[in-house]
Amino acid sequence: MTARQVRGEPAHEQRVRLRTRAVEPAQKPHARVRTRVPKPASDSGRVRSSASGRVRSLAALTAVLTVALAGCGIRATEVPTDFGAAPSRVPCVTTAADVSTQSQTGIPEQIFLVCGSQLVRVDRTVRLPSGGGAGEASDRVRVAQALLDELREPPTETEEQSGFTSDVKGRPQVSGPRAGDVKSALRLNTPPERMSPYELAQIVCTFAHSVAAADDGAVVMGGPDENSPLRRYECTEELRARPGTVPAPAETVGS
Image (cartoon, rainbow, N blue to C red; front, top):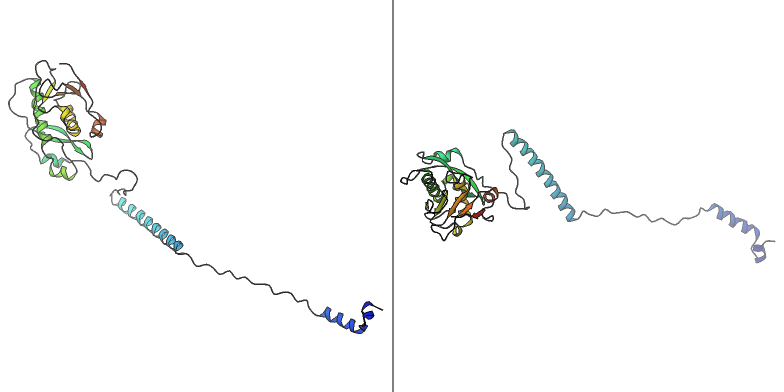
């Protein structure tokens, strides 16, 4: 007898129950189905996508315009940025038309004006003042006075529109060497040490590029009397580029 039979279960019922369990399929637990719902795009994502699209469109438009301008012979200008100093929009150039509007009676000379915080050379036709004696010293003084007169005159209308100015004011006067001075000396009614940096730089460079300079291209200048010693000035590239910050190179000369 089996253990079931010992506990009182009939054998045929046990066999029927076992066959029923074999026929019934095993029930599996229902698996959970997880569905991932896509998150909506955030506002920042939409903004970045929109901004990127506008940047790409602007870049494409710029490229097309650049090609079109180049085909027409027009040079594209640079776009100002926040890096460094702002690009200057002042051309600081003069044309032949500017010279033609000036008096044609005189001799061609060049003076230095201020433009864009630097010295720029411009053409002039100067008229030499009458009087004075003959000789090299007299010619040097007459040319120097004519150049001073041009420096104190306001720039032409075209030059003003291009940004040119002059720091030479008043009525500057120049005379030849005093007794005991070197022959190339020029005496000004205003001592050079009392001039503004721009005014002194304009005068030095204008004289240095004319017959008012000494034989070596330097300019020997001083005030009206012995209290203002003579100094030998040079017009260097550094002075022309930064006349407001670079002092005019000078050394004292003996009498």
